[in-house]
Image 1: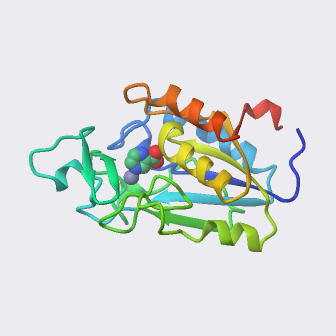
Image 2: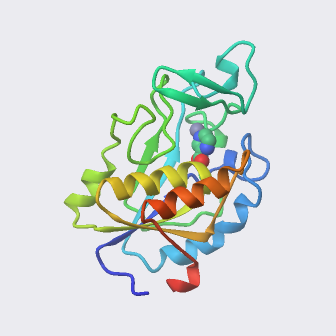
Image 3: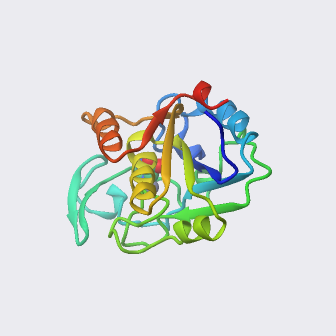
Length: 208
Ligand code: VGL
Ligand code: ZN
């Protein structure tokens, strides 16, 4: 599989809080970092997504008295899984994993910045209308294909991949460069949703 010059690599949420020792650690989340660094060397365009919440964010269980992490509640925009406090902006947990090494990345897109709205996707917030501007950035740069890697496969990677398809991009997820949270079957459900949406599910050795 050739990487066309009109491709971008989108590196999603490889942050301390999502790796072992963090507040919302994804199992083996640190084990993809070296592979992501290596893959990124094959792309001219690298974009990094960073979960970046204000303290007291609506997705935190601690913001809802009587609720605990992993409860699901109804917010004005729909169902919201509640999480431990994580990726609070400008804290060490929100920093990139120390071994992530992407010196040629040109854009860091921060998401989940709105205190009242979560954003798993790097394209659209959970109200499904507020855009991050990423689709416009990619289109203005002539990019038609997005490869996605990072954390978590069944949340931020999946929603970014689905939204990339909706925005008209070819979308691929490099499965061995991702890890999942897997809450109540969420990994299997994510794979099925991505397949139905025409997201290509590949392995890194299909690419390099
Ligand atoms: C994520 C839960 C909450 C992710 C972000 O990066 O997949 N998951 N915030
Ligand atoms: Zn988050």
